Length: 158
Length: 303
Image 1 (cartoon, rainbow over the protein chains, first blue to last red):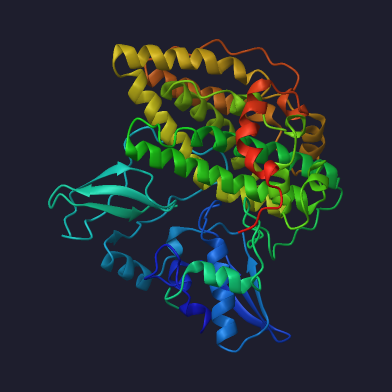
Image 2 (image 1 turned 90 degrees about the vertical axis):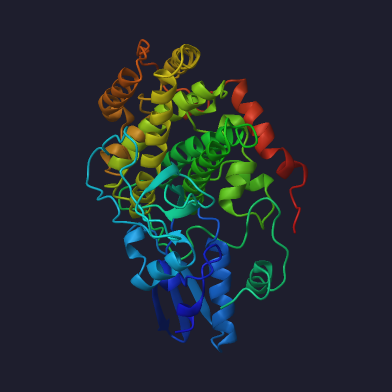
């Protein structure tokens, strides 16, 4: 319960549980074992997440805490909860659609413009355009709404 | 939990108020809690050497890409290049940590102080002849067109290798590869769209990106040449023999350049491995001077 309240350092309205980063919490021989998984390989927030978890559990009266990294299966935006998606939209960030299905073998080339869509989180219009597949954090793309003209961020499907 | 205090308070709390090494992080072992047992029948030295190959490719290309930060043609592109570099840096960290986990540290551990994590010791305290990247990723950027051609070529090779490596018998490598595939697919397609836009753009952009391709293609000469380490690990089901991805790479690059109205330069004849055996030109020394200079001047710095 304590671990589930810890928030993401870069998306502070979402908890690590909302994001699907928190994979498992259990007690082994008096030690709280927390498993987390990185969103992207280079996610710079992992160190802060780990430290925030340790501190929150220490404060809640659990002196022995072991935060472990789990690499497989790889994190997917499909793991963001419904509650997480609602919170993202409420803070002006378009939630992701379905992640691409990865099959064994070669990854097909995507030369055309991205087929991703996202409704504007500000006015609700579906008429939006992608400006860049890469945004202010590793997990977000930049889009602009043609209806209200506002730019917004979109958690891109992975 | 709110952030009524700064994130640094939590980091400080986690380490009992001890200072952190200034150049790495020191507070976040990338493989903490991951089972790093070496699979049966695999020589740990080979496994570590292979992790250095894939890790150094990512580290060196990340460093080259960050040279575009503050110098990109548009703000969105600066953000994109920095994001791609960050993904690669993350892959490098995991792979160098995996090398460290099996004790492959070369001369770096003797030079780095004890508080410096293995992956940082490997990144900052090895000399050029201990790096195992190919020359493809170490070559200078050139102009933006050439940078995008090189990124396209390097990402196409890496994506093909990582896609196969998802089946590695080493579960750590397989997991790193599975995450990497999701990321590098974005990198390759981003670079491909730029090559398309520049190749099928103005006469000047076409001329420049074509010239970039002519400069980049010869760097493929040793990219598909396996080392003895890769031979042994491929036989053990752990690694991917790079010669087996050549067909896919040729197919993808031919498709992109064709659609970009660019001529595919002559494919170079295969040579023996060079970068993978530590043979590098002066460009890697120059790159590492920038990457490592501060850490080597202040090896015990903390914050």
